[in-house]
Image (cartoon, rainbow, N blue to C red; front, side, top):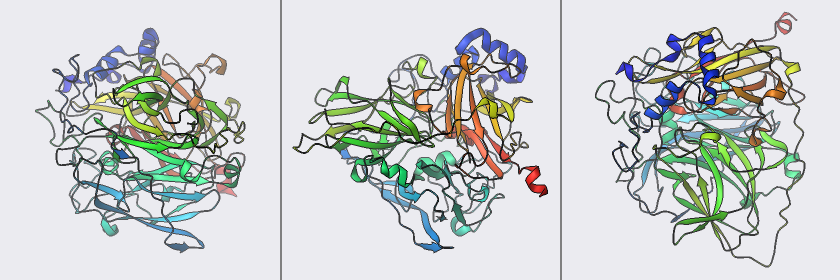
Length: 606
C-alpha cells in the first residue's frame, strides 16, 4: 500500500528537483503526473484508462435527476441583531435543518448558517466595522464520516460536539477574528481549541469593496463542514462602486457553484474512504472529492430566469476540489445540444475587488476552489433564448493549456439561463471604461523573497499527502512545524510558489491580498534574478488584488505580497494567520501552514 504513492521529494534534493522539472518542461515530474492520473477516480485514487461507465470504479452514483426543473434561489440577506460599541452586531447560528435541493429529491439534511444553504449574505460598508458572533447550534454527532487519523495528535476527536470556526475569506482582519483552524469551538462554546480567543469577531472592513465569503475552517473537518453547507457570501460595498451605476438589486446575483452527490433518499453523500481500499482507516479521507451533480446556490441542476438586459453576477467556486472553466453557449433544450457562443463574460473584479478597467475575457473564465469573479453579462441580444453555463475543466485539473477531458467525474453542464422575450423598454447596457485605481506593487518594493514548493508525499497509510515546503525545507513541512513564513508588517515580499506535483492547486493566503507578477517553468532557481519581461504575464482574470492564485503543475507563480496598509488600502495587522491549498481535502490533510506576521521592531521600540 505504501508503495502506491511514491514520494519524489523524499529522495531528491531541491537542486535535482529543479533540474528534473526543467528537463521535462511544463509536464515536470512525470511520475507525479502519472500519479495524478492514477488518482483519477475521485474516491479511489485509481484510473485504469477506461471511461467512467465501463470498468473505472466510480464509487457511489447519485440518482438520476431531471435537469433544469428548479429556479436558482437568490441568497437571503441578514440584518444586525443590535449594536456593540456603536457598531452593527450580528448573531448568526449554525443549524441543522432540512432543505429541498431538487424537486424530485426528498428534503436533504444540511448544515447552514441560520439554517440556510448558502448562508445569508452579509452586506457591509467599507470603513464601517461590524461584530459577528458565530454560534454553533449543531448536533453532537457529525452529519458525514469523520476520519479520526487526520491530525489525531492535536485534535480531540472524543469531544462531545462538532467543532466549527468561521473564517471570513478575503478579510483583512485582526488575528483573533481570523477564524484560524485551531480556534474552533463546540455548541455554546462548551469546548474550545487552543487558538480560540473571543466569541465576538471584529471585522474592520478597511479594504476595497469586494466579493468575500465566509465558511467553516475547523482543522481536520473543514471539507465535511463546508460540504454540509457551512458557507455564505459577504459583500463589501462603498459609494464609489455605487457611482459606477453597475447592475444592482434584482439584477445583481451572487452565485456559488458546487458539486455534490446524493443518496436515493435525498441525503448528501460523501465517501467514507477509497472504494478499492481494504487496508487503512475506516472512515478515511479521500485525496479529492468530485460530485456528479451541479448545484448553484444549493439547488441541483437549476435554471435562472433573466431579462434581456445587463446583469452582474458575483461568481464563487465553493466546491471542495473542482475547478471550473466557464462559458455561455446557446442551448437547445429539446435536443440537449449546444450551439454557438452566447454573450461574453466581462470581468470587472476578482477576489480583492474591482479591476482598474473591465476585461472582456478571450475564452473561458477559470475559477479554482474559493476564487471569485465579478462579471457583467449583457443578455439584450439573446431575448427568448436559452443559454447553458458550460464547464470544460476536467476534474483532475492541470491548467488551461491541458484542459482536455479525463476519466474523472465530468461536470460540463452547470445551469441553464432563460432570457425573457424582448420588452418595449430597453436598458442601457454600457460598461464603465474605468472602475477604480489600483496601486501597483513592484519588484523594486520587495524586502524579502521566498521560494515555496508544493509537494506530494505519502502518509503512514500510503495515502497521498500534499504538503508545503520552503527553501530550507524541501521535504515539506507539517502544519505543526514552526512557522517558516514570518514576514514583518509593512514589508513587501516576493513569494515564488513552485508546483512540483501533478495537478493544479489554488493557493490561498489569509489576511492579505496580493498581485500576480507572472509565471515561468518550475526549472526556476531561487538564486536566479527575476526579469519580469521574461515571465508569462498574469492571466486576464488576475489583473487586480487576489487572495487565491492557481498554480499549475510544472510552473512557478510569482506573487507580490504587502503586509499591512498600502497607499491608503488595508490596515496593519500582526499575529498568526494561515496559508494553504484551497482544495479542502488537501487543506485538511496537511497542505496548510502558519503565517506569522511580526511587528516592526522599530515600532516596538518607540
